[in-house]
Length: 71
Image (tube, rainbow, N blue to C red; front, side):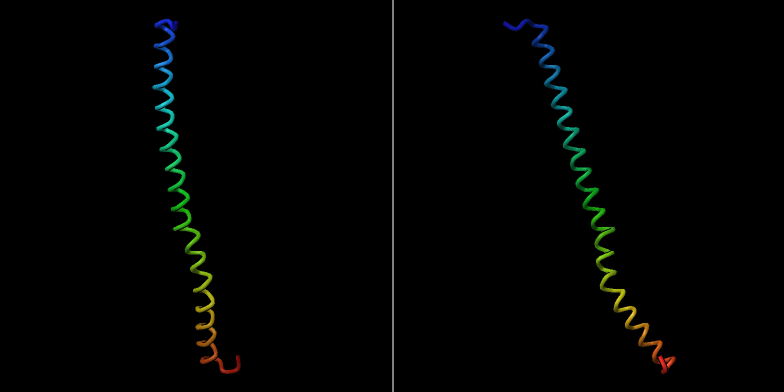
């Protein structure tokens, strides 16, 4: 037989474990969304620049050839 003090302690520990679980889930979601935002605001623009910069350079050199025909 479990005495009353031990049962009370087990109930208190169970409540604390449940609270820790909720906290861990919130932290996990925060880290997940931090990664998603990092991808959206850092990685995607870098990938976009890989396509935009060559177009910009081609346009720029075309303009320079119009100004300086010998280039």
